[in-house]
Amino acid sequence: MRPPKASIIISVYNRFDFLQLVLAGLEMQTEQDFEVIISDDGSGEEFVQQLEQLSAHSPLRLQHRWHADDGFRKNQILNTSVRAATGAQLIFLDGDCIPHPEFVAEHLAHGGAGRCLAGRRIDISARLTRKLTPDAIRQGILQKPGTMLGQLNDFLLRRTFHFMNGFYVSSPILRRYFNRKDRGLLGANFSVMKADLEVINGFDERYTAPTFGEDSDVEFRLRLIGIKIIPVLNIAVAYHCHHKLLPRPEVSKALYEQVVREGMAFTPHGLVRQ
Image (cartoon, rainbow, N blue to C red; front, side, top):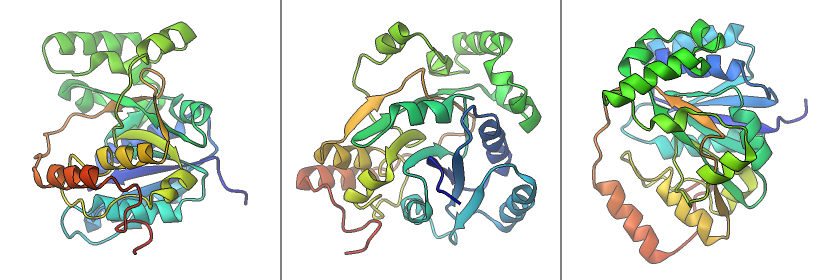
């Protein structure tokens, strides 16, 4: 079997309810030449069993990469997933971010050697999140005008955030306008060629707390080797399910600042241990 055009790597930790929605969104992609790697930072036995049952009947090409729960080791399991990936382009999604139907097609259309695509997400409200089911996703609930009107109302009530990120635009003029500014990389929605990520030796596994590491660190080191960070706001659209915010410890920020001071693109704590 020839390799797929892309490997979609989905970071998860429990929350099978959210993952079901993400996978339903992937079933509805206009571009289907991809594999899906569930990059699992130690989800429990119930999650694993549910995923096995879903995989047996899913139309998607699924594989599950898992390690035991030993604290926040997202970057370590991401490297495991990257090593397993057979697609030339790696598309990274969080397990609570549902892709727009054109999501994969747009990442493939705009990606390529020397390019890292930086997408964004709309943070949908708790009210809408509770309404979502896999079947509703397959029926396009998130793209319906009535749904977006409801999210505008929730935005005005400060229950939805980054509302404008939820609009998919096809006009070349609007695309250029919305992406006229440089934007940083967001770990929940970005893509890069596997060969380019291998040059910097993947993700730095020293990051053992959320908020820095799989995005800011990788962006900095990719830029050091000349990779262009290309914003794809309102092009590669994702819908972030509502949940409680994670704590934001400072330890990861301190490590990132050290990486910036050292200015080394290649991490010895990555895909290949030095």
